Amino acid sequence: DVRGFSDEVVALFQHYDWRGNNVRELENEVRRCVALCEDGDRISLDQVRPELLAMRGAAQDSGRAAPGDMFSLKDEVEALEQSRIREALDRHAQSKQDAAQYLGLSRTGLYTKMKKYQMK
Image (tube, rainbow, N blue to C red):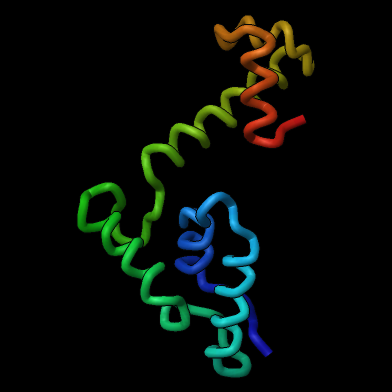
């Protein structure tokens, strides 16, 4: 009976490079954490594999992340891109042609980015 995940674990899972979006590896990690967690507790960093924690520590040691923050430059750029695309689509009543022009992209370029981020 697990009550969920701590914020640190959620951030770690969201920003870990799951080797080509390997869902099976993520599922195995969650199962492992659940097995190690005490009944009624939340999954914390104590239950996470040492390899994941080492990646988190390396990001902090290299200055790429502040303590408790797992955002790499790539993550931040992608989040900004998604936000700007949503904003442009909202501003231009979902007209992809107008949004692309506003963003300085070709319509094909906008479609490519939308596909990358699984946006409709």
